[in-house]
Image (cartoon, rainbow, N blue to C red; front, side):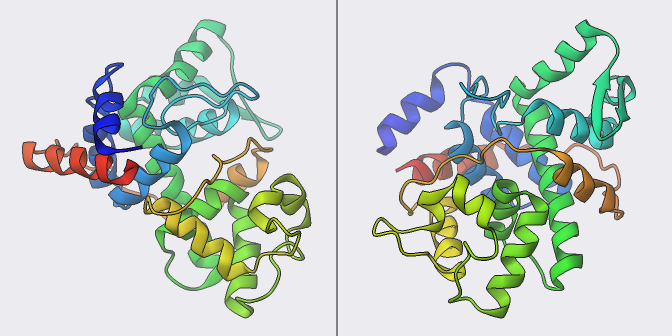
Amino acid sequence: MNSTAIRQSWTSGGREGVGAAIQQAAARTGVDFQYLLGQARIESGFNPNAKARTSSATGLFQFIDQTWLATVEKHGAKHGLGWAADAIRASGGRYQVADPATRRAILDLRRDPEAASAMAAEFASDNQQYLERKIGRPMESVDLYLAHFLGAGGASKFLRGHDADPDGSAASILPAAARANRAIFYRRDGSARSFAEIRERFAAKLGGTGGSLPPAPPRDTQDSITAMRMATLETPAQPVVGPSPAYARLAYLMLAELGG
């Protein structure tokens, strides 16, 4: 997609505030702005109202119902969503809201760019903390997207395998994920891709230079919920940092560049 098409898509459907919302979430949580921008492009094409046809995934970052409720329950109060966080209860690994109207209102927040960006940034931060404890090194943006795509536990297995033997077959370590995502784990001739090749393809797509890469598939959320519970280093509440006009323009230009 060229820059003109990106700008037309960007200015249609009331999406002008998406870049500012992502910038605000990045500034508040410390999560890399370009990572969040790349994730939103891959997941929804910057469409706050995107809805998957085969799952409950909705919004700018395509949160499924349970992952959204889990993230809002943990982090919502820090972002002015205390009413939503207080209404969510965890029971048996599932997140419930007693009142149907309140549940719908909370799930509809996925379509709000500010709420969706804030929760996506918090979710990425939780995954980063979990993986850095498991792997013992700083995580890069591509590692965070691997966690988004494979789940925190799957990403931990992948990165351990990658660090031990980058040229090894990723499918041998993650057979279930490989069966569900053959195009990711195998080449067209049927040969298995290495850890390094898969990671490089994800990195290229996040940077806007790679080929086709699917959005993260819907999955059982228990792995992600467990990872969030293990992320004990809480991000303290910070004042909202409003985007400056210069930064908003930078975000706009980067969006066009990423989609080009």
